[in-house]
Length: 470
Image (cartoon, rainbow, N blue to C red; front, side):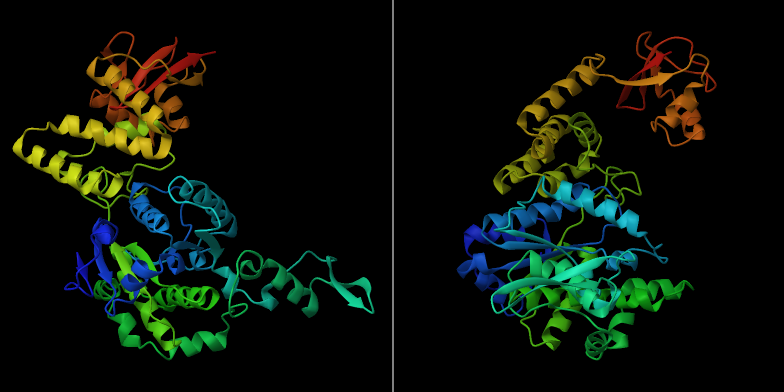
């Protein structure tokens, strides 16, 4: 791990907080570490996320668990829900332009995010605030109400209270709606009033950032070298993310640290530039290591189907953990669990020496991970179910049930139930002997098998279910 002040001696109590899972900590003046040591309850730590999908996975949780550590030290976490920037799409890690999301998709994903992050970080108002960045990227004239909507303003004259009605789509009506809808006013104590980004303030920010600074970004250079297109809205995305940091600085009095994956380092550094240009103390930047996916090759990603989702049930979460390559065991213990550093070091040594079998290590790993999201009791049951199912070759007692009509094609039923992505994938599984009749113990060999009676099946390594004929 690299930092901006490697030679400084650090309080041993903060060592794990500032090093575990951390690739880079950029705090060259040491301002953040000083505040963390002396006034942790005054710290404002930013995490921004565009709701580009509905599910969070253990890769996202690496950052969320680090935020929980900061909360336990007294810091406030501000979660920026990028409902506005989601319409642009962060180009990070993409070799082509991201598709735009609809408002409906964004709102659905935002609700899912809120529910999932609460499994890891504290969401009580003392240490947590969630705010949409549309809060400062939309302005009075952007307000829109159904035709005929009336808003009222309460006034008092000589002790007499009355309400004056206004058309909600008049300028005064829009101003009222704007104020009423600002999270900055409703949900938090702010120091400098409402922050709003206009075209004038946006261009003032752009004056402080050169074209060369943006175009030098590795991913942009690589895309252009391959003959791909680079659009202006993509180049400006890091600037908008940086403005979010400046906005938090104005609202809370500071934005002390922004945290993200290593792929977000460039964007977060632009935040330092913009805050400096606004005469604010630049945020420190913490880049977290990216968790490798279940395939052992790519980063964990839902689109690559190599992830463990936070919403996965205990048995599925445990089973997926058991499927990781042995080489990833230390990485998963470090980035996906709370085991102490001394225990992690011992596990790594024992694996290397052969004292600890990889299967035993993964069984402990699976139990640790499930306990974080479902509790100790569920983790114990998930482990017992795995042992019964795979080690003792027993059939799970709580098989998922799927209804089918007599004569239906098995492949079609599985596809409609979402258990296989396509009929061709089902045929491939049959060819590989990965579909088994659990009651006879025999492999299904006919990809065009018609369902005649109730079946108990295993598809792949860990999907068990019962088909009920009606």
